[in-house]
Image: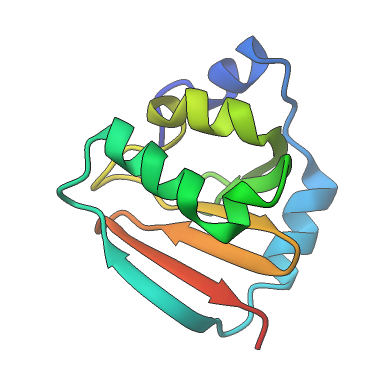
Length: 119
């Protein structure tokens, strides 16, 4: 878990959304993985740049973001996600899921990014 996750969300005016959490966790069926990328060698700046180049992040101003291990889900502006990426995901510790338009991206604790689309 990112240390002080709820406090960091509060700092940027984002409130956890229990209804979104219910929706995203109930829709967590077996993914149709499109791409898997090892991000273990990426710096936060490198990961930010890579995320900006993904269609999912590039094409959406607002993203659904959740931390499965924390049971926290929020709607977050793309810029907040990217500008404070180091606050939202800690390699080797957290799973972070980003979604919009039926696409999902998982940054897993084993430092692999999985992009998937609806089955």
